[in-house]
Image: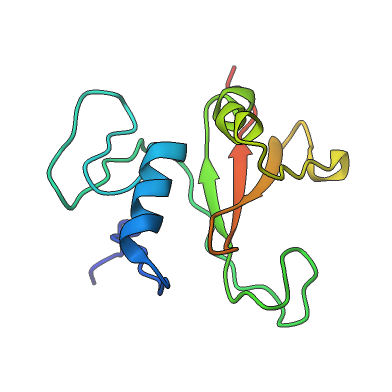
Amino acid sequence: MGHVKGIGGLFFRARDPDALNAWYKERLGIGAGCNADDTGPIDEWTWNVAAGPVVFAPFKADTDYFAADRQYMINLRVDDLEAVLAPFYAAGDDVIIKEEWNDPATGRFARVHDPEGNPIELWEPPATK
């Protein structure tokens, strides 16, 4: 039997796909042509990510963990939460941080939103020993 080896893509609707693609690339360095290891672009379609854990979890329909009018929330694994948040602060964007989200066993979290209101959770896993 074959096994799923990971997520091959994330596709979602946008009012202005070109503008949203540009925002994700400029603000977070993700999307087509980006490489998480800073070794240069792969091709015009691919975002080359670093290996690591992925949580795949449906939430209850009435969860208050993210906005009720959104069907999903993207969670991005980061290596330095403060550095990733710096452009958001510089742009005057709303950054949500709640101490109760953080745990030494699971890591640190922050929440931002893209220009179309989609929630993005930024997750810095705990340092490995």
